[in-house]
Image 1 (cartoon, helix red, strand yellow):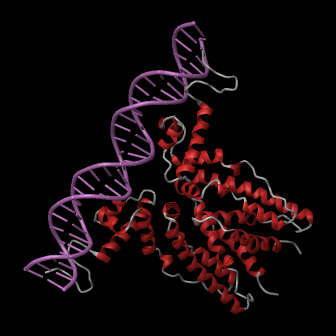
Image 2 (spheres, rainbow over the protein chains, first blue to last red):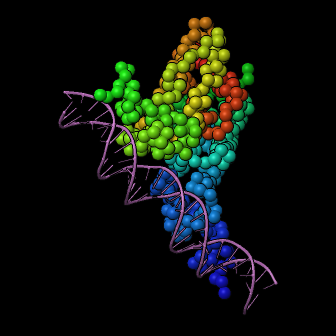
Length: 201
Length: 201
DNA sequence: AAAAATAAGAAACTTAACGTATCTTATCCG
DNA sequence: CGGATAAGATACGTTAAGTTTCTTATTTTT
């Protein structure tokens, strides 16, 4: 008789399907933290997940795709994020940028994926991130509109995307943690002036 | 008697020093065009330059550094660029961004270097590029000031850097050639509004 | 409950490139 | 001309990618 619990958690020694898959993704994520993107190997992940290379290659064609899957599986900023509500637009902007996602998904991972992913998967990956952040910024703007801080929250998509874009760029181009000053500049020198300038009247 | 011409071009079979070095860099550049960053190998470059691996490793510690050297050696946008002068600020901006450097230095090279270069060389590399472009933009702005189009060309460095940053980002994140529409948007939606907004009075 | 289908896991193998070490020999310089 | 320097060839040792093959556990079907 196969030793199976009602919820699908098998006690047997061989995991399968979703259960095995998640174990691998978790292992890949752990390996990323431990070794970094450059030193992550498929065999390393296999060992950590106590399975074998073959099993991984049956699911993902290469390292980049495995890492991408692992990031989407684990990364907190794809879980939806708390949108700040400090009572004023500037505070909300600063707060949002300060909880940027690259504390979890380290720069070397981003750079690695950028180099190794093919065009289409990369575009989807970036797009996903952009949309979530875009939503947060729109929400912030709408609240500012309701408070009367600004007249309209209807801005050009490129302006909406700007804070995220600039922050991402900073992460990609430097190997240093982002100084808070940079975040303040993005908000005060670039973003808010554009928001105010875009107001009617 | 060694067979040497007055200009240092030796007819002998063994090149040395600068002459050999440049042959290697040229070979690396050609290999980049032919094979792309991902498929460039040290041996491939050595073959192309009709020398051997050892010689290359004596000069550069790894692929990334070799490529970096090759790009600096060959890339036109480090040779100083013609700064456009169309008679109006907007035209100059568009023209400048349209002759962006990534037609020669292909995106895959940028992404590769981003992933493989260490922090310091990377920072220098990026910085170099940013400064050249920054200079061009400042020149354009000064001319606009002289024409009376704007009152002051003194802008926050982050605004000066913005067009370059946004264009670079576009190149890095997508695998497609940049549509002209994007360039127009960067100028009309982001940069010029900030320039005008920054005027006194 | 047995048989058939499916997928996990182990191991061996091919290939490719890295980076190094060794040695010979051409070229340069005093 | 004779010693110093660096080029070039060759051969290693290593690492990881990705594939292939085979065995065996587990699930599904009848």
